[in-house]
Image (tube, rainbow, N blue to C red):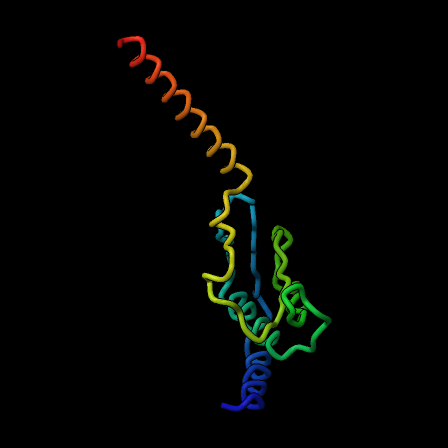
Length: 140
């Protein structure tokens, strides 16, 4: 399939998928642990996906932080978002993405809550070890 044909299909989908009752709620409560809760109507899901297909062909709006081109998907998504959505997409089109092994993923790095917990566990282990060694030394 050629790029021109894909563009035609995307334009046709844009005409065919109703805008009526197309609603999406994206809510990041900061507690979602790598997931992004989404609630959408059927038309909302269709228009949401279409917005990203359109981004594949959108005019670049400058350079992105990963060396790609910034593309604007907000124009299409803003019409879908309900007022109680609190997430925005920053879309960057790149030629390729490195393998997962080459990228540091957020869930691989202890977060602001994880670090104190790790420190607490290590301190508790050391205190317990000290107590056990002290008890053994007192016995002998």
